Length: 258
Length: 323
Image 1: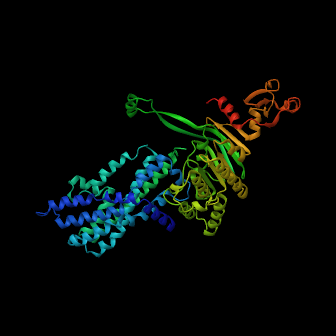
Image 2: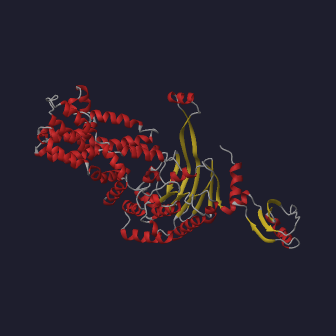
Image 3: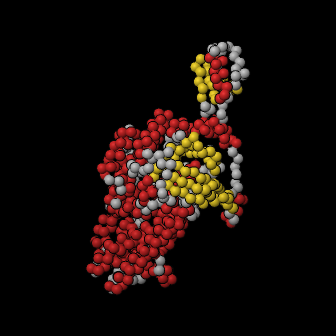
């Protein structure tokens, strides 16, 4: 595993231009931050103050940077072009191999945006951040689970390329649902009631919103632990989905080209 | 050892005639046809054999290699490679085989080959001492020294192919599936790769199954060939046997000084290039014809050869009809 991580780091450094673009494309929370702080300037919007919005969107930016993934594109492209063949010849599950590369990339992806966001968060939105020791202790495991749910869900989405030629058309649908239901565009409490219910029972909330809620929301111990248990449940479910779709897909693999 | 019994691999392919109307129609109703890429193939290859797998484009060679290396699940039939069922892709199976595809790269594109080698070492769990020894050996045999630290994208095709071969062999596989390993290489590099494969086969008593469009690869490397066409085996045996079976006549080439020569009584004139002739002569008549040519007809530079494999295969594929 250390070798795989080291190679992942080398690859990340080799693709530095691509990573700069990736980083710039994850700044949507800053746009939403600008929008909602001006809305909340004259008074609270729903229960959110201007400082709450600052804290919320900067926390979203941090979590998105640490947990976002491009694995669906990678897998579907490898399947479509037939280069997946080379992975299948190695005695390591592609989920593990690709995950190692992605984990290695996290520090590089976050190297600029996260420190900036953390400084801003602490200086402008500190009063909206939690100081509860349990919530702070749960933050790191929650971030890890968010990463895993996102990675496994997108891995499963990428595996659809085993069954349909242009699986990436589904990515637009994914991104629409993700933006709406994960808290990426709007805090979940600001959604209409029915969408809020959908969000709470979808994996999207657990990909992004849960660590942010742990950072910014006051919650009871039970509430925090239930949230973490649900997140762990989604991690197991999406992991099962990813590995199941992989197993079914490999049987249909046509190893195109050459 | 490789055992293949009644192997078939069928693909379902979406079929659509050209044009906007048929494009719109295919949105609602799709028609599929079944392509029988491999259709009932059986053969056995013993450990240490070098076997050439020949056939025209689309004959089923690469599909068979992909099934043998575990990339594809067979539609029907059984496959056994070194005691394993390939499509289960068990770790010990993957450690025992390798697949080199001339048109696909396993090297990490933006990093030097040394990084791919390090990754393969970790994944295949090769002990460091053994890895270093094998890499030294491969570096020497394939002259990789100057290439190891260069990003793969900056290597020439020939350099990349040599690095691919090393990447494929670092874990010490005992069965080698080589799919067009010399494609795009110049003649000198083709010879180097061939020599290397032969040497590896002899040193490690490894089994080699090779496909190539370059007949020289097959002639030089493979005492046995399997010819496949339309997904079916149409010959399995030694190369000379195939040539003899398809075209038992010899080719007699020579140069004459005669200004108005007429050799039609000695055999069929197949080729004339200035004063150089090539005759097709039945094997039984060779002594008499050669006697005539070297005696009264005073020709020089006489050579007797089997028909070129390319010609034999062209005739063979021309005759084979799709099932």
